[in-house]
Image 1 (spheres, one colour):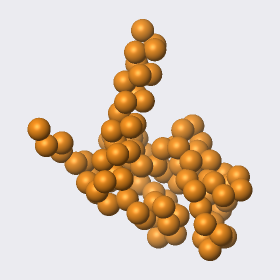
Image 2 (cartoon, rainbow, N blue to C red):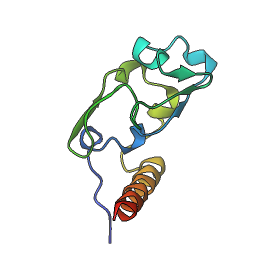
Image 3 (cartoon, rainbow, N blue to C red):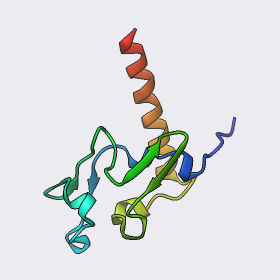
Image 4 (cartoon, rainbow, N blue to C red):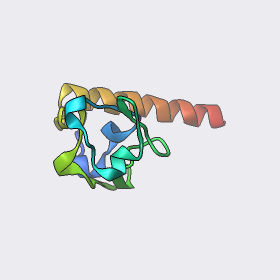
Length: 100
């Protein structure tokens, strides 16, 4: 069965967790700089500080034009996109099982 690919504006799975940044990306936009720890931008409540909205419904990146290089590597339906969606889906399923 072929998995349907949601629009980036309704998904946001790739915006969960920390993001590796390169020195050439500095300085970062202030919202990301506030969360920087060395070579990483750390998540806020499990997701990128620049992601606004509701995962799975409607999301947006408030620094899209200046997003980190790693973020720009995600292509809708590409290998990284599908990998992150699968991993995040497994994490949610595990969290639900643990709550029972």
